[in-house]
Image 1 (cartoon, rainbow, N blue to C red):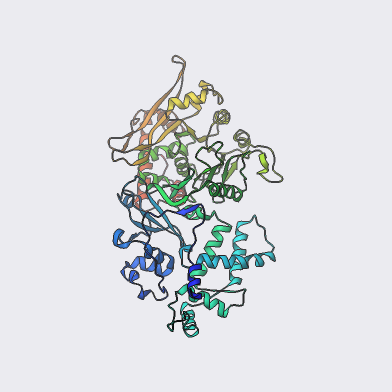
Image 2: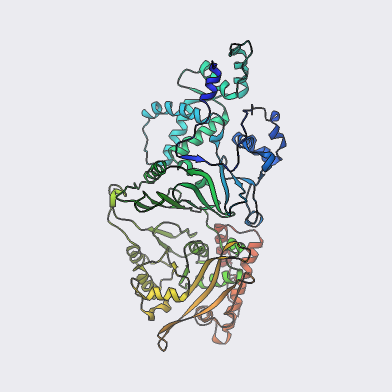
Length: 627
């Protein structure tokens, strides 16, 4: 007959959540629970490098994860405090662990049979016993929250209330204290005259039984941290998606139906998560809960949702098998709290110093331009980066469907469209639909120095050209792979810009995701083009390519050096350079390119730091023309 201790041990084994599985790419070693209070007694701990030792001292769940790894076959993963694109992006079989935040770690595990490697989140909830303790906490939480008045829509307040509740429910104790008391309290528990060999978790629950008053739970400090994480993750955050949301190296998160969650990573590109949806019912429930969490319920009647997560990330949800034959799916495009700067894009090879210097000169002098390319080519990233070139004293108005643009200027008005009240998603008091067209018309009355449009798709394009014609510089992103395609779309319905108006647009940047000879997918500015104007003889619009990307050398060539229409006929005139000396304008591009390189060499790469540095340079008079 099983002893009480054995029954307790069995009840504490982690249970798989129906429909969501962790499909690990290795057979986990049997976890013989160790007393982690004394780390020096742990054989694996003694094998770890110093940096990894410091991490497991802070977070014991990382050590527990290392215990289940077949280290004899895969080796100890390398701990990397900060990922580097150049150093780690080209690793053929990466086996490393990096921190996503203070508690979450990510293991990048190689798959030699697939182009996608594994993405394994290591969460505090991995710590032994946390699942069972969480059940006890939730039972007590119901009684505690019944007497607490708070706004359930305020996420920060919800976090505060949950943390206060956990403080009331739990008492933190030292592991050694538990160990000593249980040693003296338990004897001959299995009936054969021998003292039972108890795991630390069993000791903890026996300690709770002996000392608790029914309302309080005794937990270790590490377990308390894990419980706090779990409560915030599940009650306020996005549940199993929380590690992906907190990981700053992730660009996109997608679930295409049953099977794994897929990741687009800034360093390791395409990855597959070990977290999988294994049945349709669970996936549907998760998608419904996800939609409710963001305040836009999804139903069979309204199966598609486009929304913004609290952190600014964009999410698209498609519900059910009626319109998605592989089942419910969702895609999250992550929002970067701090955008990439131009200098960081230069590091990535997207553009070079001369292209950046040229754009700086054009934008600071109020030229209008479009960043064009296909989906996921990096259009918005580039537009964000070059906003630092807008004069620091300028008033900027941005107009978007989903807020993605981040402008460093203090005088920045940020406007976002509003959908209709379909399905009541907008809540009580919501008005009628407000479109990009409406916001762009309103922006013209706000006397902006620059108007930024997240993406031009429809009739708002016509208003954008009217804005340019009245002296309001506009920059926007646009889906077009070439200048010819851009002009075709601009002059055709529904935008219908007359061809004679196209020269109000000054420059066009064509950007694309391209594959290098080594097979790596990278984002590159393919060309920078100047719009010259309408040619009545040809009946078309003339443009000149001034920068071109050379795929053979992966460099940018200034093909328009000495023959730039914009620099010589517009910018030089604005800067007061006489026609006889208009070639001096090229020195201004070179000067700005050298300034950017110098700032880069000084280690100034942060988006906001670069903007401050450029503002200081402009104020100092370094950019004045010397004849």
